[in-house]
Image 1: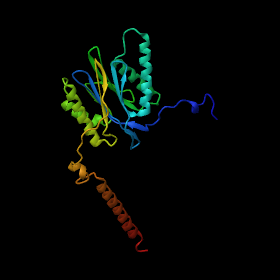
Image 2: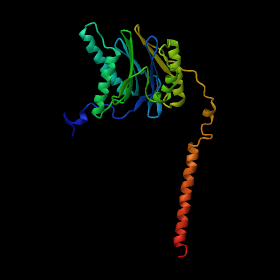
Image 3: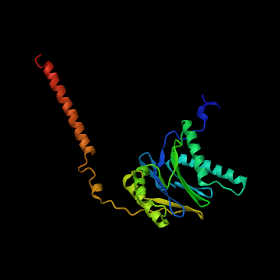
Image 4: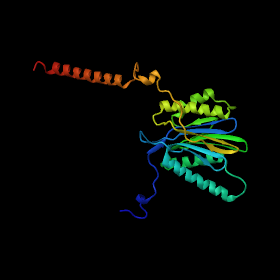
Length: 265
């Protein structure tokens, strides 16, 4: 029976991710921070939504991008709105920068992890304050770090190798956008949850700009895309054949053993 004190009436957060967004990539460039994310929202393995914005401004100096559960990201944005409102109420001429926002989010994520009720997101926080560029990341369990380029999700495996090879501190805006597009195109080819509709955000001392959604030019006629199982030792066809052969051999062995034991009876 439900009562005012029962747990059934408590406000519940996401216990398992349902609608999720995939990778976010952030880099420093000559004048500030660039961040890219596609606009897909996957319901399980189905790309259900294609207009989900995952890059948001935080206060005057910061930008956040999120992969993972969309509703949890919305909850995080509520926390940040309250944080910025409380900071503005002091009216002391100061405002929170990206480093302070990053530190705050690491505490939030770690706190929820300790309650065994995590916010299912990986976050990237970037910004510029007093001429200092800042870019950091925090995982759903509070693991955090700062770097010149960061990524979440499959971007950690498929985009960061490209960034390690091609990123430079003196990248222009155009070069930075081109580098991010190369990474996003690589993810589009290889990540089933990625969609060809993305946004790129720029934040500098002058302010924040988020691009209109657009698509990348792609090429799908690579030989490996046309016949992905040709000469693939790990293909599902070969695995199925090996499975059937194994089961057949086991059946034959069992049959011979049965005949050897009972054949003369």
